[in-house]
Image (tube, rainbow, N blue to C red; front, side, top):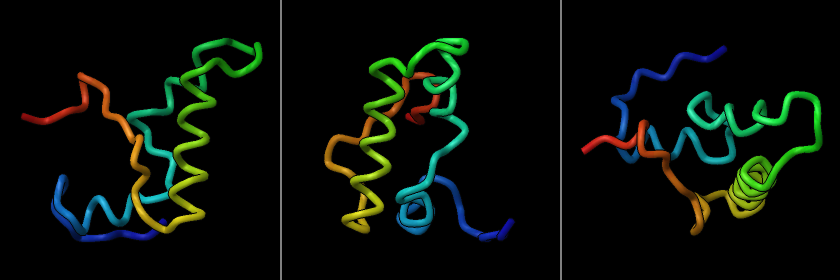
Length: 70
């Protein structure tokens, strides 16, 4: 694991998260308990793939209400 000493919700922090699966979204992969992935998991996997290919944040990235900061 690498430690990056950056403040959350800054441009530097967002850049470090490009193309990475984050814990705040991991629940969408665990939702079906052994069944095929649902739409949220597929959408998130597509978002991560687009970010990896483009090397920038996906246009259709989303936040979840409980992780969004005001």
